[in-house]
Length: 289
Image 1 (tube, rainbow, N blue to C red):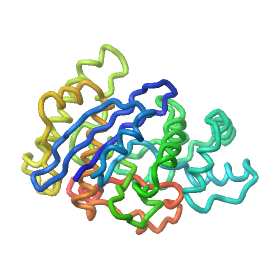
Image 2 (cartoon, one colour):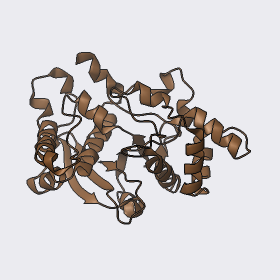
Image 3 (spheres, rainbow, N blue to C red):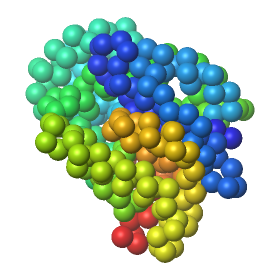
Image 4 (cartoon, one colour):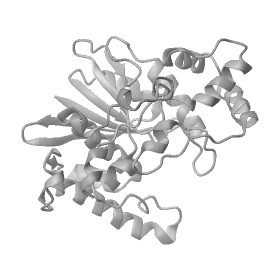
């Protein structure tokens, strides 16, 4: 079966740096099949071609904090949002500049419950500095809303598993890297003087994922063994976006093969996750860190 990982860009430029990594999951492990910079404009088409897709991990927030959603409902003079689908429809019929005005007016950079539960605290979808999470969240939600509902299930908002439907989950590559015991920062070069160091860290991350099960630590024995040929490995190491997409793909593969490692959002005693979303990470590995 197929699994995939996406590093999503909220940039308006076309094409932009939205990367898709796909892999085949079997009893032998996870074999990476393709690494593509699809751009966000072509991502839906590329994913639709993956007829055997089972799980795809996306590196963007699937929704906004509950208090901002309540503020937004008041500004739109409507009842409070009751389901994520209502949030998604609102984003589809709203232009980004209007949403940005509401975010600026709200002022508070509130986290979601899921952001505070991650093993590495995630940035709020309302975060606007280096990088801004607002356009990524806005365009990401619109992307999810436009997908065929018969083929995809957006977790945790939709729970009815349709035959041959793929589960779409939000993942946080930095959290996954931390839980895998690998470098979770410094691999995204901000300037030329750090480029060589960042390049070396990207190689360390990819090699670390490949040899994760060989480190003699039993807590990683449930992680699918990763197989990447040299040409694809080179393409991944050349881009930190591709690295994040690979990590998201590995997270999706582990979620499919060992879901018990991932806390159930519906067991969190916080109903807000059904509007705010959830970051899927194998946090039960953290007990052994």
